[in-house]
Length: 366
Image 1 (cartoon, rainbow, N blue to C red):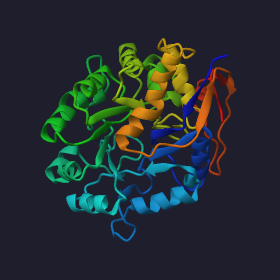
Image 2: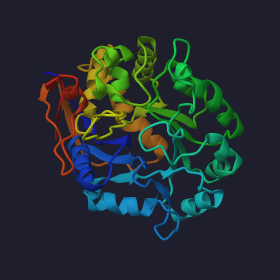
Image 3: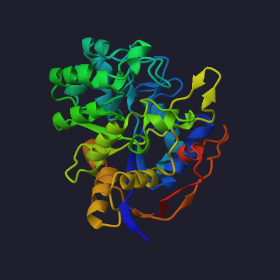
Image 4: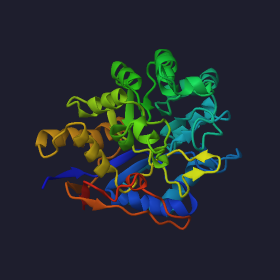
């Protein structure tokens, strides 16, 4: 039986939510040996100001941090709440936030481009207002949901291109050229175009990758319309998945790391569409191990285990400058039964269970 021990890890892109969801979701992260998170700020209202005494009609980073701590987040070694960028974000807000120590990263969403992105604003406006320059000047990380917004449907996902490819061909190269010292996290990338952009950029540009984008393709989503696999950006094609797999299996990888984009929805399919996001809290290291094996890694070999450890535990935290965690956990090649996560707001279905799997091949031992 294959088993190997790893240091505890950071999920560097996840959704903790609010109300009755947040405590069970934090508990699910702690149960999968997560020592900290980057908690997405698309709350209701979004975490789009720094201090709670700021009169803007948003949640503050300060308030959301307090909520996380009260809900079990005091069990984390460290965690980051990025500032949600809106039309009201100013360079002075960035400067003040950096000085206070509360602001360590910001999040760009394509306007109306995903769940909770209704308050976001165009990247061009953030450049013109001086916000992006302020990020560069104050060494604040820019976390980017890299998809073009406002595209015609036939261009959003076509045979020749899609919203992510357009963004990484047209927007991101210009951003990097104009702000060469800006530190950028390309969130949940899904395409070869994005992988290639990150690889050829300097050390200030990195990317996180989800388990589902390493395991599945758009065919898995569409064959039987498996809506639990619906996330944004969408899963893509086999050649894109292969580019992602090659990136994370590279022994010299210093740019690609784990970020689950785990998104809890008590109701996925609605009358007006489908909530975007796959729920993988509680089982992410196990799914990443499965993905590595599917990509050809032999995790019974110590050299392959070290590559996996680098991706899961080191590349991302090193870039973010996070504290090294204390404690370890063990991944075991032993089936784990799946169950819904119960919350006061309703049950949440983990991705594999939503796709009809009752077990996954890897388990965690504390």
